[in-house]
Length: 208
Length: 179
Image 1 (cartoon, rainbow over the protein chains, first blue to last red):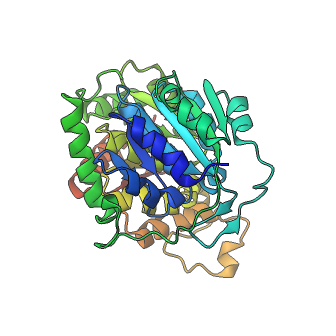
Image 2 (image 1 turned 30 degrees about the vertical axis):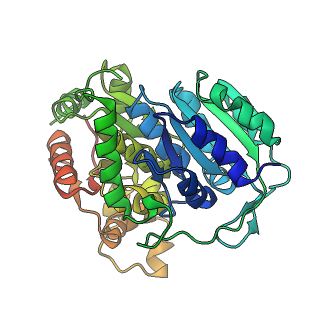
């Protein structure tokens, strides 16, 4: 089993220009290992919609890899997104499910059937092109470069120990910089950073 | 009176890059045209709340999505609209096809009728239509109705402009067909 830090640190080490979308129990931990304007915290509680939000970014920016750091509870709230991803088949999309078996930040309540669900099996059956499952931190750390470069859509099921994260707010004293802004203000920062780092953006209605 | 192809032309002129949603019998012809379109991409989702998250992601990536869903799905979408597009200040135009408006008219009631237990359980009233506009008002989402005699393409043009100008979702409730 991985700790959240063992899940996130190798990803931060190997990350180059990827966009990273976080939600729930990984929002603050990711902010401790990354401080990029291309990080986006889907932290205003939208009932499991981080994976589909990240899908939208991946479809808009096919030249950029987009990594969604989802939770198991969030994944269960929006399982249909597995089908939507497969239907659109973005090769630049990586969905990581950090499976700790509980709704950590709302008080460690167990998720339904959390000890039985095989998320990698669900992704494989749905038709994800590349599917991985990790329990060993060394195996995960060694595989990150491959995960970030293989042809997607890619799915990673990571078995993770429950952490100690509490409810997420957006306040000036949050250690994670992307939580010191309103979602609207950070959206502007993100969009500006994406435009600056991507070069000229496609004109409206150009294919792709 | 506009046809889907006229609406498509309007979407191209308005710079719409993606249509995101779930089709019904009203929006089906539009979805078919978008599916064949050379530049506008169709994203068919599995439930309507997903449409707003995908559209918000598209907006973050500098694309210009249009969400097209039925009013039943709009009611399902509440927390997704709130937690994504509205919190982000994303100017996303939305077409909501209005199930139940004809039935409501035949029953002699309108969206302003008091939502009593008697009304909400009447078999001749579709409670989806009854709740659509009050729900949009409660959520603070600007909206307009497009009924018989109104031009859907013109209505779409207005909500696209309004959503972009006000940086929030704006909704056209379509109670007639596209054709």
